[in-house]
Structure formats: structure tokens, C-alpha cells
Amino acid sequence: MRLVQVLVPEGKSEDVLEALDGQGIDYALFEERGRGEFEAMVQFPVPPEGVEEILDSIYAAGIREDAYTIVLPTETVVSSRLAMLSERFGGTRISREELLARARDASPVNSTFFAFLVLSTVIATAGLLLNSAATIIGAMVVAPLMGPAISASVGTVLNRQELVRRGVFLQVAGLIAAIATGALFGLVVQGTQLIPPNLDIREVAQIAERTSPNFLSLFLALGSGIAGAISIMRNAGSALVGVAIAVALVPPAATSGLGIAWGLPGVALAGAVLVVVNLLAINLTAMLLFYFAGYRPEEAGRGEGAGATTRRAVRSRAAFLVGALAALSVVLGLVTLTSFQAAAYEADVNRAAQSFVDQLPADQRVSFERAEVDYRPADILLGERPRVDVYIGVRFGDTIPEDFADRMDAHLTEQTGREVVTRVGVIEGQTATEDQGVTARLPRPNTLVAV
Image 1 (cartoon, rainbow, N blue to C red):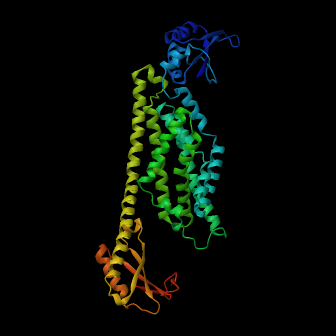
Image 2 (tube, helix red, strand yellow; image 1 turned 45 degrees about the horizontal axis):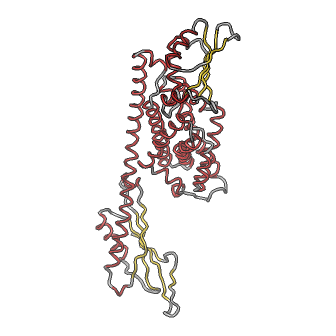
């Protein structure tokens, strides 16, 4: 329940009370003596879903520019007369005025915003280098990126350009700052003993996850944008939703920064693309959800012209976001397709290598151990040949033919339809006597034949 208080300017009491009577609202009227331009204060309880409609009827009386309006949450209102109002104003969303106030409060002042963003990026970058998902999630708790995304979306549907400008500025400037922070942090730690020497960041799982984004990555951003809008409209779970939005934005930005620090343009570009795609998706879904929830500027109820202007603004911005998202999604589509092709190729290689060993004469006593395939989505796009390491097991003291690797290479090329660079690793093993019942095998190959 909400308690609404409105200061009524001189000469407007009759219009305001007539509007409230027309809405069937019980109200209390108090004489105002604090300021000469106001003659009364009217207050009334109303369910949250009815605040917007009731205030619109009061604003229609022409007091918007002169009156002070205060909407207060109430702990308890005891009255059997409110049952009819609660039944009339069924719903789950807050009023336009409350939404606007929450959007303004969601974005902290610039100094606080950038301080928290830099701190969260430093922690997230450390978590990426440590390959620690827990550290990355912990960093997201302090990342302040939900507020600007919500502010921009609310400003669009309510035609508040100051909110749009501030929201867009904080998002763009904040993510640029996050990439720069990740790059600077990466440059600093490279010259220390905090990370292993000659670390290849592309082999770190948490970083590799963000350098091969696919369409599944997009669902995190889409879901986060919808959840952010719902949490603001219903005042529930906004802190947890803020973590989800930050997870979609800060780690990819930190990954892009690390790519810059390590001089790996592919990593930097992949992280940046994921950041931009997620940013667009979050803003698009939040804006559309607010719009379809029925939020419109106050002016939209006063004439068709104002409503048409809002519709045009929302449609044009939605079209821009959808167009940009579709263009960048081509990258996600290529990565998704090539990732599937790389996984399928690895499975084909294992089957082909197994079939090659199975066809060998029994007296060669060779067993297939495993095949390791180095074939990434980028290799597929660039037309690079896959690199395959095939490990076979032989009895201790046995040898393999000198052309074994060449024959394996030809077999893999024929079976998979791709020219391949093949290396064969030989693992020598020895079986103990039968009563001991154990088998000893060297952990790594002691012979390597390359083609």
C-alpha cells in the first residue's frame, strides 16, 4: 500500500477533490499554512498499482507544475474500505513515478560508480588469471552496472533524455574503463611472480570460455535484462540481478583487457565483441519489457501526439539495438558453428585412429590410447590444418614401423576429409606376471614421430 500526499496550489482544491471523488478515493484534506502559494494538503492510501492512474487524474486538473507530490510506502493500513480498491487495482507493477525515482537512484554518482567498477574489474581479472569462478562471481557483487542499463531503458520509455544520456554514458565509459583496467592489471602482473612464466592465457579455462562466445552466451544477457526490469518493477531481488548483469559484462571486458596486455588481438577482439553483444541485449530486453508493461511518459495521456512521439522513440531505438545485435550475432553464429565442427572433428579423429589401430595385424600388439586434437574455431575460419597427437601403447621393447605416422596421417585425412598434421606418441608398457596382476605403463610417451 502507498500513502500519497499532494500539496494543492491556491484555487485548485475543488478540481483535485472532484478528481479523487471521481476515482472513488477516500482522502483527508488539511489546511496548508506553511507556504502561501498552497492552500491545502490532500492525502490518501492507494494500492501501488493504482498510484499512476490516480495521479494522472490529479495532474489532469492542471496542478502538475505547482504541486509537490510525495508517494510513501506504508507498513500497514487497516480499513475494510480498501478491499474494493485492492480488487480494482490488481497487478504487480509499480507506478511510473516510482519507476522513475528508482531509475534515478540506481545509478550512483560518477566517482562512486567508477571506483566500484575498477575494483570489481581488478578482482575479476585476478579471478580469470587464477581460473577461479568463485573469485569472478565475488567481483560481480560490487560491480555497479545494473543501474545505468536500467536508467537508459526507463529513460527511453518515459522520454527522459537526461536518464538516457547518463545511462548510455556510464555503460560505454564504464566498459571502456573496465577493458583499460584489465589491460593495465595484466601488464603489471606479467612482470611479477604472481603468475607462471610464459603463461598462455588462451589455455586458462575461464578466459577461453569468453574468447569463444556462442549463442548460449547471449541467453545470459537476454535473461539478465528481463530480470533487471522485473526486479525494478516489482522491487524484488535487484541485488542478485545486478550480479547476473555484471557477470555478462565485466569478465568479458577484463578478458579483452588481458588480450591487449598479452598482445593477443584475437582474445581482445573476442572479449570486446561479447561485451558489446551482451550490452545491447540487456538494454534491448529491459527497454521492451518496460514498454510492454505499459509504461509511458506522463505527456502520452494528454494527446495522441505525445504518445506517437514516444512510440517512435522506442521503435527507432529498438530497431537500432536489434540491427546492431543481429550484425554482431553473425560472429556468435560463426563461433557456434565452428565450435560444433571442431567438436565433431575431434570425435571423428578418435574413431578414425581407433579403426586404424584395429586394422593392424595382431602380431604388432599395438593399442590405441587417445587422440588429442588442436583445432579451434579460429583455425576453421582461417583454413588452418588441424594438429593431431595420437598416443598408442606398445609392449616394452617393441617398436613400430618407421612409416606408422605417415600411414596414420593418410588414414585420418581420408576418414575425416581434412588434411591433418599428425604426430604419433608411443607409450611403452610392461605387464607384470600373472600372479601380481598389475600393469605398469609410462605416463608420457617416450618416442615421438612427427609428420
